[in-house]
Structures are given as C-alpha cells and as structure tokens.
Amino acid sequence: MKKIFVFALLATFVYACSQSEGGDKGGSEPTAEAAPKVDGEKIYKTYCVTCHGLYGDMGASGAFNLQTSTLPVEERINVITNGRKAMTPFKDLLTPEKIKAVAEYTLTLKK
View 1 (cartoon, rainbow, N blue to C red):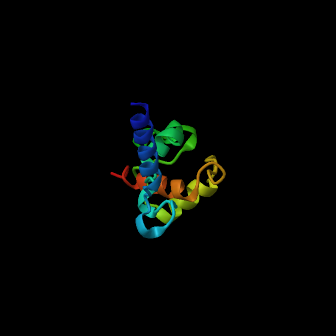
View 2: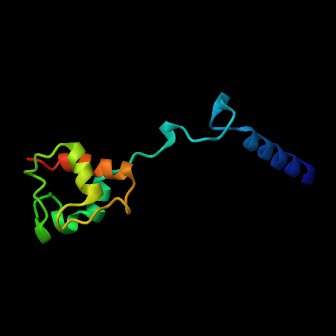
C-alpha cells in the first residue's frame, strides 16, 4: 500500500512539473493576455474622489468639474501625471498605464 501511495505521489509530481502554461513557447514568461487589465474606476475611487467626488463634480479644494471638462484624454493624462494648480502630480505614485486608465475612466463621467 505504501508503494502505491509513493508511486501516485511521484506520478502526480512529475505530471504537475511537466505542464507549462506557455505551450510550445518553451518558457513561463507571462503573455499580454495574462496581464491583468488596469481598473481606472478603482484607481479613481482610491485617489481622486476626495477632491473630484464620486461623480466628478464635487470640486473640493478647487478641483475641476470632470463632468463638464472638454479636455481630450491626452491632456487628462498630462494633468494627472504632472498636476495643475492645486492638484498634486501622480507621476511618482501611479504607473503610466494606471494614469491612462484613470484618464479614460474620467471620460465616462462627462454628461
């Protein structure tokens, strides 16, 4: 009985080690499909609601109303990255991908 248990354990171990997610690629490097999508809404709710509010129209501390903003996404990325007036820059806190996701999310707040 002990031999059967050891054999089953060994066979399971060998089978598990022989499986690779990369298929024929010969490695376990993550692919673009495996990278999780950045959630701009979640990041916005973490860092931006304090001044802009949940719907982008709160205006605390002089924050601009995102519902009426006409800035294109590229300019929004610039403002989030480098700040403007009282707004703090987020370039040292968020990655460029996260900043872009937030900028794109703010477009959904427009009326």
